[in-house]
Length: 270
Image (tube, rainbow, N blue to C red):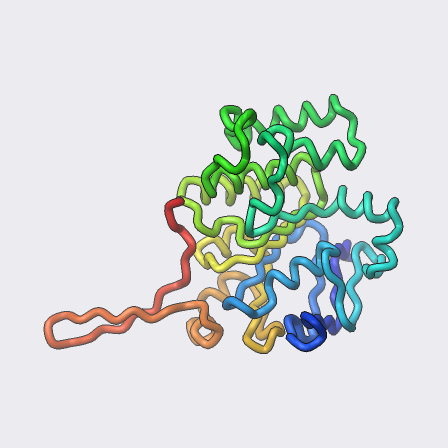
């Protein structure tokens, strides 16, 4: 039997009770899977990730984590909350949300210290991350002085040092240069190969095939319009165009205009 990490059944969520953000979401995520969520802005991708992480709670429907239903009441149990935060790591789209200590090193070790991990264990994990992410020269710097790509690396480090079973990432490569994007993709693949479940929301369709076993497409109705293997989704131009995941460029050559669709890409130099 599959080891189910998250299961959502007919989940709805609205902001202030009147602005729908998710409508009838059904998803099952198994241990060790790589899942990508794609869709235009405003289709509920970030809201979906926040529900998975227990930051907000569904208006109706059922969300379970490892067979345990998630709701506000269960998170009021300090023991459950602590164990959940050890198992599930969230990396926000805006890295500044996660970085608030005077130095990079303090930011990275803050989470595991709060969760009660032993200091020698934290040090070993920190040393490994310094090498993996090549961040030694950043450790004593204030986070607000870092570039977008450097901040993203530190936010990822501050999550990986907890060694969660599940990594949830909101637009992890947005605004990054190709080299930093490549390093993050390689890191996610390595973490998945070690057994971690990877759940990513992204606009960058160029990375989807590498970081996905299954892709879910969120549509304008705040619901899932299609799911499937990455190759199947990415080779469905009608689906991508209908859901604003490709844009059309027109090019004039002499007296003729040629129209070409392009995948959305977030590979911008920071």
